[in-house]
Length: 273
Image (cartoon, rainbow, N blue to C red; front, side):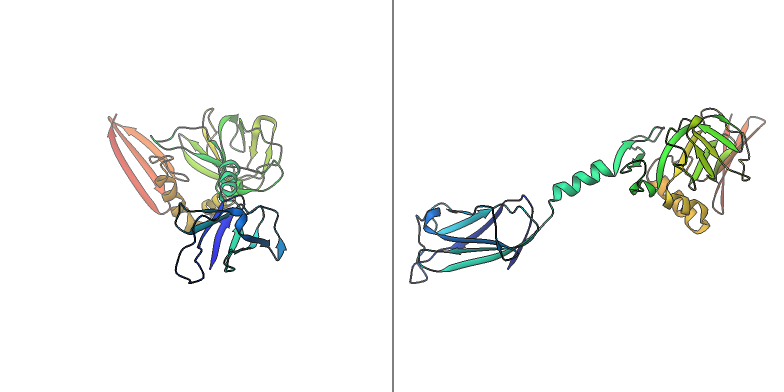
């Protein structure tokens, strides 16, 4: 039988010791009474194996802590000259994997307003030059500080060119619109849209969402847009104004009508002013 374990994890394997009749348990043996062999990849391993009895039962436990990946072989020879052996398949330490996910993937809470008991998180980068998991969905959420319909100024501070080729969503009172980022400049955190200008002049305080590669594809692919909106709503990031939705409001004679367009669906909400 092969046991699975991790580097740095204490391995404990029980085995019985019987007298020459093969029935009577032998009790009272100590570590020095056993012959021991510990191999990894057919090479003698460095860690020490110790053996101790489980109470006075004639059952014993071999213990060792593997310090490397690979197939380990543990063998014990009893004073009765019986041999007990087992194999242990050793892999990476799970704690290291968990830590790398926590520290390397979900790195910080995004600024912004979210529903109760929810939050937006940024996928982390290894560094400013390496494309890491941050290219998955959301790169960052920023605030508009000015600009024109063609050149949006924000509080983004990454180096020039950092967001080139991605997609930005601008959430304005006139509606939520996504645009391709032709160029990004660090000074004033400017996003340039080339000829594909915004249908409005951004207002100071507008929320600006930069999407990573998957988010960019989703927003620019009609077949995936509706799925992204549903995910955004289910995450509780903004249930009233989901990502990539266009919303317009009209007021007349004491009534306010809000038209929301999501993919090929139109939702109309009426309320008293």
